[in-house]
Structures are given as structure tokens and as C-alpha cells.
Length: 390
Image (tube, rainbow, N blue to C red; front, side):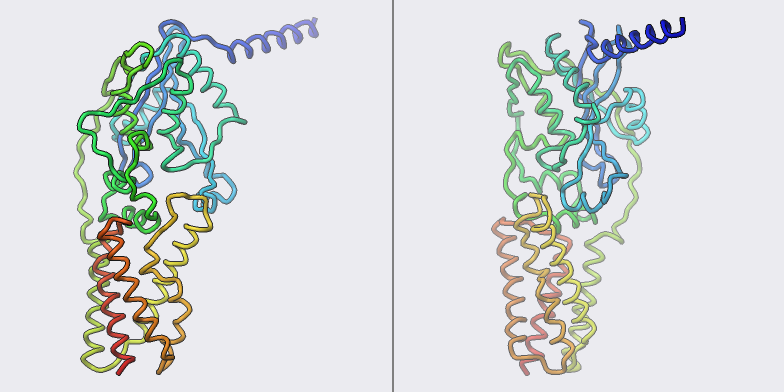
């Protein structure tokens, strides 16, 4: 008898498992795209997107999103820096998803999609297959394969009608850097870090479709999209689920990059003036300048050539953060450097001028907050040329 019960239980488990894997959505099911507004941290500054699958008949109300990463991944930070970190698709009950972003005070917008029953089932089956452990991971790319672009790609792949992403009214194409700066202020440490790390490749205009690497533009373009077969709108209902509450913003201007770099620039200019007036050279200042700019240059080179990040290529911050500065520090220590060192200092001034040219013609846009420091560096190099040429 016990064997019969065990056999029956095993068969029932198999049947139930098979049913759960092939669950059919009811005709009342809805699939929508949730767009989450920016948060307060740099990691949340660009917003978030997810699919909501809602079927009251079968008690389904889940959110699938492609923005999960595992901090327990071996060498997590190294892989992140190298551009080799895998992100995961995640699944959460809608109520938990909603409460989490309400707690973070982030706006939630929902667009119910105009899909046929077959398309709803196809998309749902795709997500169920994608959430399996062997299929969950994907190689994240900030601009071309992220939590927002995956929403677009999954929808297009599972739509039997061509989705036409029409250009919104008053749409003005932006460069990738400009799109980032809309979310991260230039006078913030995150903004300066981004402008330092990312190269000139992000200063080209993004195509309309490429704008959809940001959840905001997923929402905008989905709202304007039509289905080619029927010419109907892709979105049949658009609503704001939660509107963020306006909160007082603390003023951190005194500790902002512009103020800090202005102070550093003023210190360099002041010491340079005193050195010129007293016919001397503050050796420690020059060693610090050449060491720090050289180390920043090494970091930029590593991001360019030692990672899989496409956006860190062709970074002309190397024109001021010059790696070779590390190798000439010995000349700064000597009372009288080699004659070639004066030519090297002139070369550094030329590099700063070349950087200005790149900035003016739009080859690469640099961190504005660095301007006081860059001017001070130029002045210091000119002083050193004068000092050693006496």
C-alpha cells in the first residue's frame, strides 16, 4: 500500500510540474511594461524597467526584470570593471516590486500592451524559459544590452506583428554622453567619474532606437509605437501607478567637484606664484602632480585596452592624464634635469592645447568641473619650462 501511495504521489508531482511549466494564460490576462523613475544613488539614476504579467483568473501577478546581479559572484568587482559581469533576469510578486519602489520614493508608470492572446502566451512562455537557472544570465552592456533594451528586444521577438517605433513629436537626438548627463549632473562625483572613464565613442549622436537604453525612452517610444499589421497603438492604456513625493534636496555644493577642483587649482596657482616670486621650485607639488596624473592615465589605459567595455575606448583624457608622467618623476627629484625634460614639459603643454581643440570641436566632451585644475596644470607646466630654462 505504501508503495502505491508513493507511486501515485510521484505521478501527481510529474503532472503538476508539467502543468506549471505549460500554464496557459486566460483571455483576461494582461501584459504591461513598468517604468521606474530615477533614484537617489548613482546606481539608480537611470531608472528601471520590467514586464508585469497579470492574470487574475489564475492568481498570477508577477514582474520580470533584467536588472539583477549577484554580489556573491567570484571576483565581482573585477568582472564589473572588466565588463565581464553577467546580469540576471529576476522574478518578483508585483506587490513586493511595487512596495520596494514606493519605499524608495520612485515614480512607477505602467503601459498595458495591445497584444493578441497568442502573443501574450508567447511572451509569457519566453519569460518562463528565460528565468530557468541555465538561461537567466546575460552579459550586461550599459548602452546596448541592459534592463531596458531587453524589454524592447523580448517584446519584438515575441510579437507576430512588426513593432514600428515612431519618432515622438519634438524629439531631438542626443549624444550618449548628453543622455547620461540628463540623469547624472555634471557637477557631481558620479558625473565626473563617468566623464573621466568613458571615451569619445559616446560623443556621437545616438539613433532613435539607441535612445532606448534608458527606461525613460522605452516608455516614450512604446507610447508612440504602432503595430504594422493593424496600425493600432502598441500601448492600449497608460497610467501612473505611483507618483514620487517631492522631497527637500540637501545642498552639497561646498563638497562638489567644481568647488574641490577649484580649491586644488587655486592651491597650485598660489604655490606657483610664490615659487616664481622667490625664484624656487616646490618639488613635492610637482611630484604629486606627475604621480597623480600618471596614475589616472594608467587607469584610463586599462579601461580602454584591458576591458570589454566599448564605451571606454578612444578616451582623450589621456591628453592631460599622461601615463609617461610616472616615468619622468626622477627628473623632478634631480636638482638639474636632463635637457630633454624641458622638451617633454613643452609636449605636455601641447597636449593640453590639443585637448582643448578636441573639446571645442566636439570630438570629446570632458568633465567641466576639471577646468580649474586643468588651467592650473597648464600654468604649472609653463612655470617649470621657465624655471629650467633660466
